Length: 392
Image (cartoon, rainbow, N blue to C red; front, side):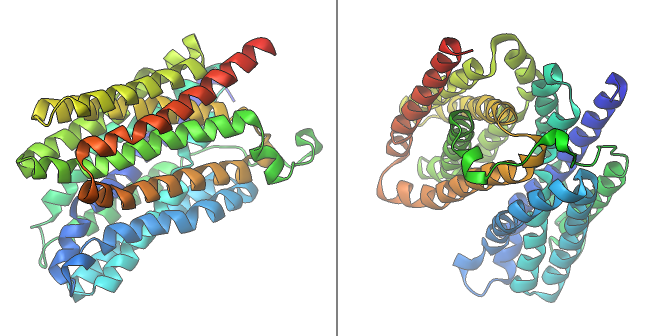
């Protein structure tokens, strides 16, 4: 693939990433608000958001295995189609005042996310090795657009039609249509099936590679720590007498911290190496913990959450880059599926435990509990760095 064509494919994937995450952020923004209007009990209001997470968990492995056989483009187009159908079904659920139908719609949006989370791997596959870290970073940088557009379409669409929030999900469907149009321009070669790939190893053999395990553990550490602290932040801020508007500002700063570094993380990896950048990510997450312990003023929350976002970015992009060195083209479907499903399950466990930890402990205790986890991740990365220098 020529340099011009390679950059064009990565740009398409980055734009598609911005659109898919816009849809996901829109659900997070208004899903619980829409659910609260029609739920029979207050504790069921978050069912639409939980359904989106469930849809991602269900779709991740089948999506990866199917695309390993059929190719990236058909899978990505099908995923975006699920987003269109999910937005329409969710809007119908609000119109019918059916929480079940609304949640089925967001389940399909979650399945869209299950396909779309492989955009970063597709970028790595079309990029030359030297450009690979930057290609992954460019794709994840699409989240900057989503951080701005997702809440916007959620709030703008809220009063657009009756019942409230029907328009939000119709706009989500329209965004998914745009993603389908964009993805139709993808030109990613079908997976190689010839003898050049050799025989694919059993999944257990792939996963047991030290580099695979360190890549997975590093990315899961970044993702789990980020989800745990981010989920707890609004609750902790309100508990410490901050307004909902202040909490929303902190979350927006955090999301920008997550995605803005993507413009240069790949270049840093190319210059300093993937493991040192992942170690820097662990150090930034430790910095988040220290700032969280410094107090409960707005500045403490804001600065801590910015470091949390940048630390996640370094570990997630670094972990993805490192993982791509551990499997062949014939093995990538299962290797990527196992990685992403593991990371998602860690994030799901973190999101479910955040409320309980705040309830029975405190904001400071929740963050202190991250330190042993971060210590293990740092030890694993230092060990891998030593092994690579001893046996290049």
